[in-house]
Length: 231
Image (cartoon, rainbow, N blue to C red; front, top):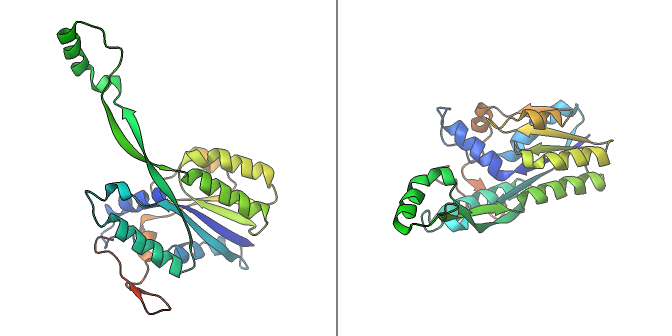
């Protein structure tokens, strides 16, 4: 049984942030994905082997003005993951204009109506929000690639994002001889996703603290990658 793990990086990251609020331990974002995923191989049988770990995320460059070191922190983690054999795919953040829901600005609209004596159909207040793009499609594409090329007998998606539900259903229909399983990050369990697969697991908040990369991570070249102080 060859098992591949496909990781929704941001879903996992926000799960770790939730766990950090409850576990009396050092920050846990320096997570050793290789060790964590390998600890689940026994579930698939005594002879199960790790086909690969595929990590999908995006670097929040749009926050660099308020958090100058955010890119350096994330890049350090990516470099550390790669040193353990994890395959990394990065998407992008794209700016998108969003309008504030009408219920939150009725008072302002009321004032405008009285001042201008004209009807205002909807709130015109808006803001720019950066949204991660392409990651869900990239995750689904990798899952289909692994199953189509028959390089994995089982694919474990590490995510609690229901946007992946159509891909899971399609994957099970197209590849009935393979297994698609779910590993829910802490506090990301979803009943609808669980019903879509034959097997699922939950990562406990304690496991994040248990499986941490060494500090520093020393590359074969001798270069040392140090954990960011807040991680």
